[in-house]
Length: 410
Image (cartoon, one colour):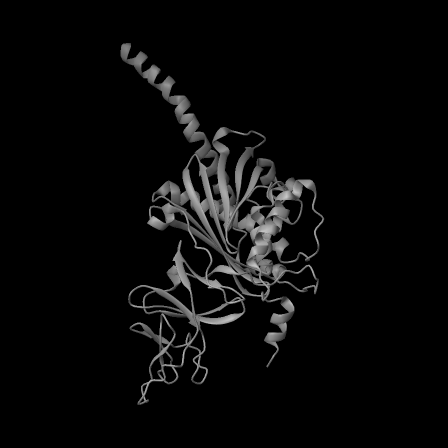
């Protein structure tokens, strides 16, 4: 009898704990299972191709409100994982052809793509030799750090006065950055990132990539635009773009789950940030376990860092925006968490939801006009953001007209 009483006491104590921990997991598992396993996946190659066609910009207004097409600052050009030791990769960023390569010491380098001898592309069949990159055409070698010619296999004297332009590089958070400035100014500030990602304590768990026909400034402005969260992103993140484009709030998924956002914006030097509170409602119920808090930080013109804390732990997202050409930006979203099955599962599920929400943003960015905005008092964070972002433009920052004329100069 005493043992039975003890067992009952233990169960009475444990049951609320099990309910608190197990019920949320069960609900999430059920929703995810129904949406992503039982129901056929909506993110097929065909639907992705259809979305990309929607995102292709068909018209660019020659409006005076159109900002320069490429901002100054640290620009991510390639992911570290794509550039192994002795590997050479061609790049096309901010309207320029470049070549990235990693020398034997593990250091990443970026320089102009074309050999000054006869114009061969160093990124096409070029190779790393020691601390140099070798042109595939005639074997000319150029030093990785200075760009100076170091060797010509058939010449009695090396033309050391011949150089290829090198770009200032930094490698951080799994990305290789170059310093771009239209006026040729040296780097005036340094990058920094989350300590847990830099140290390797957090590992990459998921990745999402998309192309956007929007302007880099519009992409970065999401950090300051708190009002759009409860409009464009109130509908559950489980809802793909095709369904969202119809009547999203009438969807059974939206009746099942919706999101409420609260945002607070601030500015500091080369970065701006927004503190977020997110409440998920399930059939109108707003449980505490479905709350999370986060901070979204825009570091310079092309890097966004997201830190989120919820019942599953602490997670960080690194979002890079690489302007390859005017109105062609490659966005890569990578999620990091501490090693473990739970972290991996949460990051995989979150990345699917984030990709659905990002699809909505990209569809808007790719087709919006560039106008002088009508901003209300409640839109003050957008005004602050635009003033802040203007520091990344200078007198020589290329306009759409200039880039268009340059591309047709031949």
